[in-house]
Length: 134
Image (cartoon, rainbow, N blue to C red; front, side, top):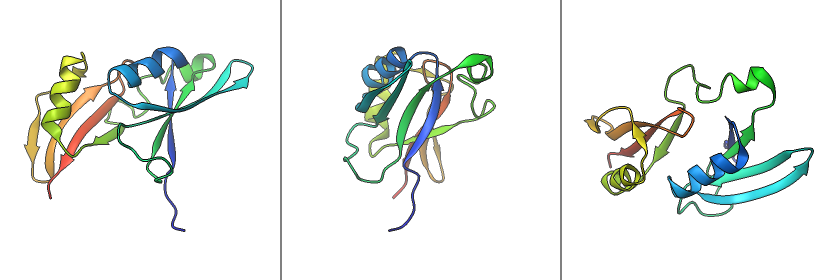
């Protein structure tokens, strides 16, 4: 079996707050929410329409513990775009996200590779919404 990145940890302030935002605003599915004891949970989110066991990358919401982790909430990529949400219909998703109150950092633009816009999650983490050409 080929290798793939199955998940990416995103440091968040609060499990429930982050889970609600990704579910209610971006439309993600809560794939798993398991209590690990001691205040820790395994909270996994996936974009809408992402088939189970597909090998597609999942988002693990990891609650910050201590000042060092709290300091990177919203800035895990040093101010750069950290995550890329690919779509098959840019304008559908852009308008839905805009209506849901997502903060966009720019106007959508058409590039040689596709249509893209940078947006922020509830903590300021920068994402690309991206539809590739072809």
